[in-house]
Length: 434
Image 1 (cartoon, helix red, strand yellow):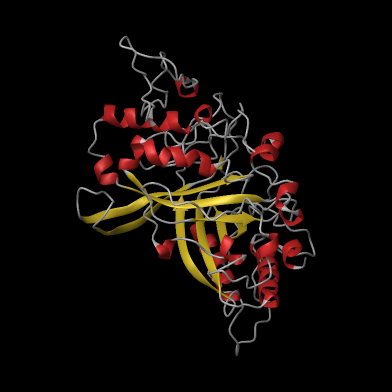
Image 2: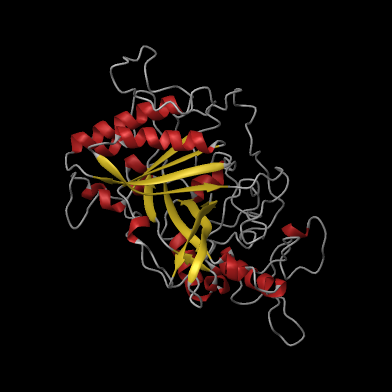
């Protein structure tokens, strides 16, 4: 199903859009209204340590107000025994419940003659709103035509093999995975520690395939943050505090099977941006590409300016005296707008990333070789069905978006994120014990 238009939105959540940079590089697409701003920092429901509950009806880290840092990891399962996979999910569940509460995995009376169960680099640090969100890739259900765990018949139809889009340059070492884990918190060391512990617990059962760290800027909660291209990012997005919208757009229903009810589907895509070349473009060209003013965030179709112009609805019909659309037909904001995608909406929760520099000899960008910044967007979005969400939106954008001359999708995957865990249960239990 596709999502209806929606009015409330969450700008502070920096939930980055879909498409080349997935719709919100242009300040977001969707219904236009002044959004609600969940705070970046801890809320009144949190104690002084920033502890968020691990157990619940839905996994945390999806509609949670976005934290300042993330560390994403995809894993390949190396066993073909379902009992080993179950044991891994059980150990990851137990560890996650402790890590999110700031508890060490080592007992207080560690035997000095044995390796500690916890690496200890966050001793004395609070959990800083740590969330751990888990996903299952299509290859867990069938890999190279083999159903290793007997899960094939329970694979949801929405968990499709991602199509190859125009312009994709997916690097195998940064693509796919049987399992995924995303750690988010306000402290990068807390994230790294959490993934490090889960990696060790997976030893002999699963190994890391690829990882990516990311960050969001620390703007005031009432100010829309900016992405690495310098534009306001996340002006409009479905509000994660709107339960009705989340049911319609994000949470899976009966169609995914009992084990996926209350879960969701995550699309994760590292998107490299040719920042050196973007920075050489004129301001006017940048604004035409995005479809918004760089300083104010107002759509090019807006006729007024000021503090609130950022939230003026996009006018897709307004034209100049010669009949040409004011908002270019291949502008990022226009192509990402729900009106051009049968009302489709997704919940965007992306992070910027900076991996230093690397040698570029191909598409990034195509007209120059040499050392370039390996930086961009770790795009993450959640939806009830990726076929009517990200895939529908990005198929058109990959072909026509002006932004594509500056951005390249270099990896990623699609993951089914099961419903949350109840106390006494474990991740994906309803799937693995069926």
